[in-house]
Length: 106
Image 1: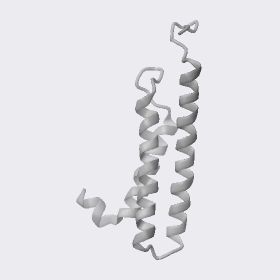
Image 2 (image 1 turned 90 degrees about the horizontal axis):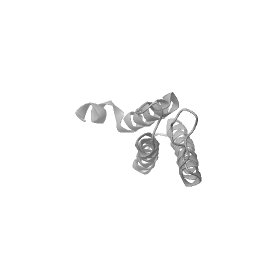
Image 3 (image 1 turned 120 degrees about the horizontal axis):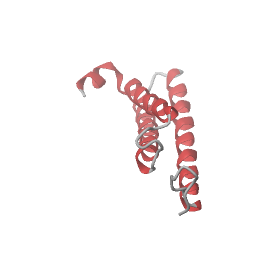
Image 4 (image 1 turned 60 degrees about the vertical axis):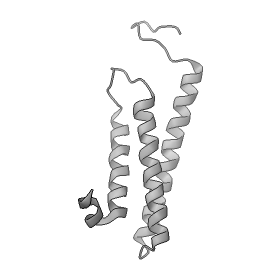
């Protein structure tokens, strides 16, 4: 791979597409999780909707993790703040689904 003027290797076209796909998945998972949270807010929260909300929040958390740990960030190890925001959103949605009793038990 070629280097930029700063000596940092430039990502290949394949790496750029992989990163774009990972960001797209993260945004899709965020929309799904927020839609599910909104639907739960307007309903009593049956066990089926709780399961779906948990799955959506878990997939959001996993998509965030893939972006955080599956790519090299410059400066080394520093994630973009937006990824930290998505991580907090996923954890908040999981906590909301679990409720205070389950969250405290873990």
